[in-house]
Length: 456
Ligand code: ARG
Image 1 (cartoon, protein in one colour):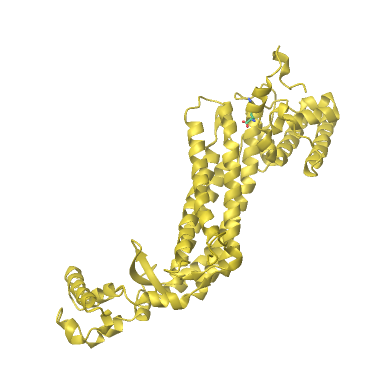
Image 2 (tube, rainbow, N blue to C red):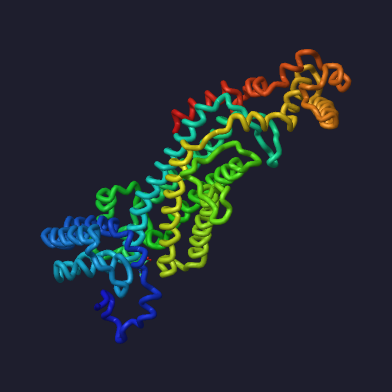
């Protein structure tokens, strides 16, 4: 197979070099975008009279046939032709003859690969964003059912204050909203046309990049040809948004793992979404959640790969940049897989209200409520905190809950305490009274749900 660039060379490329440098084994996935970009390029060349109209038509027809062959699995990818770009171009020339050789006029693989990657990511990033929204909606739906389901809220994984299960879920919806914003913001820079930059310096031929941008629906045009072929910020931004998204999903997965233990038993995972042990017959393991947590590692790794690949590169294109594709593809596949998994899993999770309820007894989670009760009676917060702390210690020593202490016992710590103290020592009241903006009261949680339903 003669290489498109063979003219300059006396010696044939060593097999070991071909294997080492090829990328078609993974970048073949870019073919739909490569074809789309080439069709637009051919149309632009004809419009600018750089090639003839019928030549462009022949090229476009040939490209469409090749696309059909690839889609139906009839196309043979050849590693000797390095990458997706040279495979398709060579197939075109074989199909339509010498006129196919006009397609690569005023173009380089450097702007071509940047274009293909941007077209790919533009589509895939939108798909990821849609899944983020979909998962947010799944969580919202579940949250609506649990506005009045109380559970312990934790800090340091120690019981802290009662919250509603709904409130806990909405915290994740907020994270997902920020994830969506980050992906949407990155889209502005993904959606920038690099084609027409050619190898690095533009071209002497009368091309029209504005026309290309219109054909390929790009919002912006990369204004500096050197930057256009050496910029991979858009990949890094996507990976970075993806890494943050995975961090959120991993925290959630960790809670599912924890919550489905016998120790917590806050939730029950459906049999169809858990796995067994090959030796211990009783086991039902949360492998799905664990894998979500684990896959976070590969997404972080991809981000660090790209940052490292790019950090020492002199302008402009360097072959190192071919190493961007596998981490990018892997991240897109991982994010889509993980989000689809969560969308399917969450509606089937059983929330164990009885266990949440049980976890609310003990732990003295209403101590802050008691301190705030004293504040409302004029005690400075520090003194209220101290008095309440002593009441808690007394109760701990007696082995009883706060509301099991008598009024007299409590008054021994502060004379400001009256009969009505028992009104603040119930979980339901505690939730109801946490009306501060963003707080866990049912009224406030309802308001949050309404707001999120609108913005999601
Ligand atoms: N396969 C290459 C890549 O992914 C395409 C660009 C090659 N350009 C070049 N001048 N060798 O980066």
